[in-house]
Length: 445
Image (cartoon, rainbow, N blue to C red; front, side):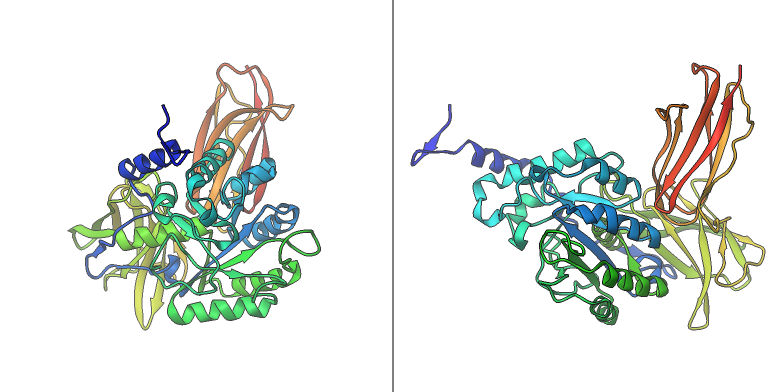
């Protein structure tokens, strides 16, 4: 039986109330950082001076045909806020997700949430569910309020870790309200039109060590709100790429996750000797959401030239850098992923990477080949990327998925067991944000 008030059903409001009372707000994360000296945690990944996010709304066609290839070319990750009822191109969105871009919510119908308070639950929850059901390899964790009208933030935080508005402000290194992250409207109707406009906002973010978010709709001459010139956008990306050590360009969700992990992280040195330091990096956040690496550094011990670096016994990458005359070891680690061991090693040139960080992403020939029944497949990742490694038959049908996850720079080996598959030719396909490579495999019985 539905209880009524003035003739209006109250079932939905009761559901919302129960959700608010019983669910944990994934968007609410406290500040509880604890760092043992002399370790430091970077404000932004790589100890860069500012964070930059490019976000796209409404799913116009040129976003998939122009913007995604352009961002892939530069190795930058963007965010695409999707309106479910507008019939998005899910194949194109999945392709973007495979390249490491974020696919996020712009609600079901694009209605201003402030005017539909009784229906906000459906707009928020159903759009997230729709994206999670159709986009493999990532979770829908952020939202852009349609028309920049803020919705019920308490309700929104039940489902999302961050929400975007467009008030034209640079966010500080820790935003005051993750359910109202500001952005700058780009294109003919916004304040950001030329590549110089992008660069000026990024430079302003550096002065405050802040986070600047750009909001783009249509691109070039296509139909849509406030078209942005792809030429001007490319000029902005050129500038960012030439200052890659200063600006961290990443998706909206990854910056939000980084901030919350950075503010919650605990770094403890649990053992020390002349040749080995052991440290533990943890946080109190749910690992299913907050599994993004944070950047840590410490001065290199005076009698060490370099180090080998492992986490849970597996090599991870790092770099020896010098700042203000101090030589530092700098590296990225995922909290709650096991103890990290720093071991004294032979000399490594300042500024170079260690633990065999590849110069480019590539797929090596498998060994043995031909094989029966299994073979080893080795691939290299030169920068953090979402990696897909699949085996296809001669008709292009997927027969096995070997890797489908975010990988840090390094060299990896996986095995494919062909038991149960007929003899013949197969293909191994590696796909990352930098492109696709394919190798021929021969299973012979």
